[in-house]
Length: 190
Image 1 (cartoon, one colour):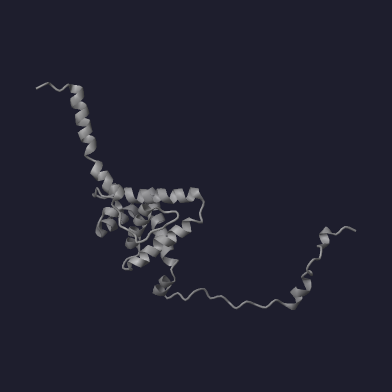
Image 2 (cartoon, rainbow, N blue to C red):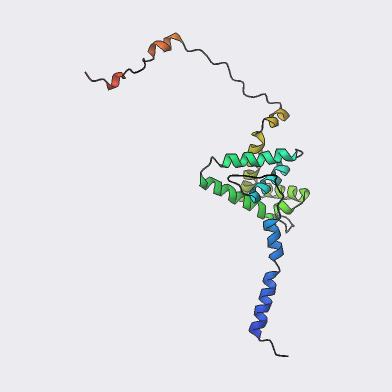
């Protein structure tokens, strides 16, 4: 039997060590809950799944369809924002998903059980700084998506804005309105 050189032993050892985290990395990338018929314009399925799970923690005890509507409303809202802001929201979602080193868990946020997610959220809000900012961003997005649904207002007994009936235009104002086709006095030359 031939001797294995140190160089060959080193490369075999490095290859073996580098293969160890591959299943861990793949589960962090591909193991997300399925959202039925997700067709978001801005959010990827992965980001929508993370927000779906975050909404379950911030807005508990709702039906699955409510959480799907929340992610759809967030996606619709983000479609109206400039790309730089959308990029910042995506970064916040990624940070929220992967800053789980704050807890003793090695799992990402989406892989944690609900009690561990609650502990994670408490720690993020408790630490302050960038951690609190990321948690508040995700919380506010989820609440924004939730309150875009008309059904959400009944739980807080909000009946809608109390808008007074429109007033009729006064006669005095109508005398000041120029006739159609008139040239403004400031543009008239003598």
